[in-house]
Length: 456
Image 1: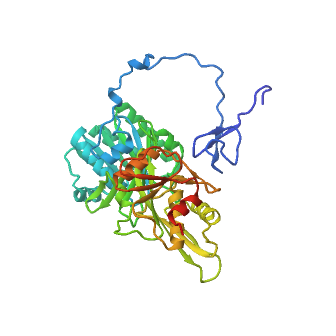
Image 2: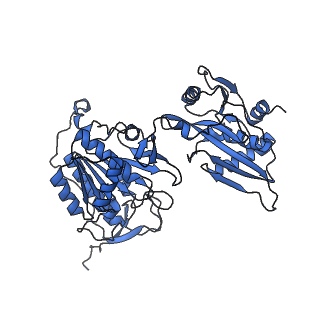
Image 3: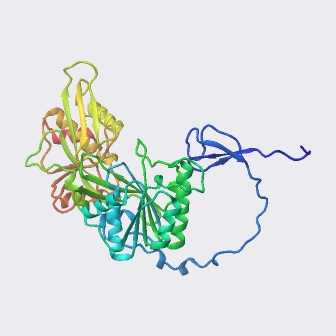
């Protein structure tokens, strides 16, 4: 080897996020994934200088940039538009992920139908079902239209050919893991193939001003399958959640370049397809003529939307011996364990020898601390076998010392409770003014709350 010339060292690239390194590492420093760095060949020499080149368009003052091509177009499905930030933006790429059978394909077929009615041709490409199967679903939900085109393809080149022929305003690809590119090596649905297909479709969407919706698979823990770079390529990431035994479906935006990234849309699935629920609070609260022990209502915030939710608890004596059982459904198990300990230590409720079961109503998942006080009251009510006052809601985070802390959006939460007919609210100190028809009971700690509700 000539003196002064060093041999090219192999480069290593992360298969999840694309991070490159000159040496191998067990853990990627960018996405924190283990065992994802693979050798890809000699590293290219670094450029010492870059000369100025031609520009695509001159830089302009930001106030002079035209917005006509970036205006959101409403789909006609209000709950879906809420999550997207007003509708579909031309040229935007949306990634929709969810478990199999949750209703993604049905909802997106309805979206394609609405867009075909109002905004021009739409193209649905299915890589998992035949065209006849999709046609049957379209007939069932009433989504047939002359400008709604359908194709069943698994080759990227064929998908691009359909795009050239139809020139759609909206492309729905179900799903991105089933389409492969013959120009790239790798197994079907693998990280390399998925990244290549998503990159090509993103480039086509931007150049044509065509909104593109990519359906993605999820892993066992609910995360989006495939490389993390897929989430960075797209403009909007939407998750479709729901329990198989429940008709409720929640659509959440976890990334949105065109609007808030914490909005939620509520849908009900039935024989006629997926239908938006503009006022879903009644789905998460039991309708009874009288109060029952172990139940308390709170108000959660999903994005800018306050939703009433009911938490229930059951406390039963452990007569079978062994350690007491702790079972949780729809709530954070770690937070339930903490509230259990605070109720026993600061509230004087004996739970050490009792089985405690806690759940939310309607299949909704509650993770925010604002539901702590409602959960604590439900556990205490179940232990005493005494119902809480009728028309009561509880808001507040419970600390380890038993203090009740304020939560964000208290005003909107109380306004929603008053609109739904609740008359008494248990809140932390300095909760603000009370809406008309709602009386506030401020409690500094859990002991004071239990003393006011259970004087004996």
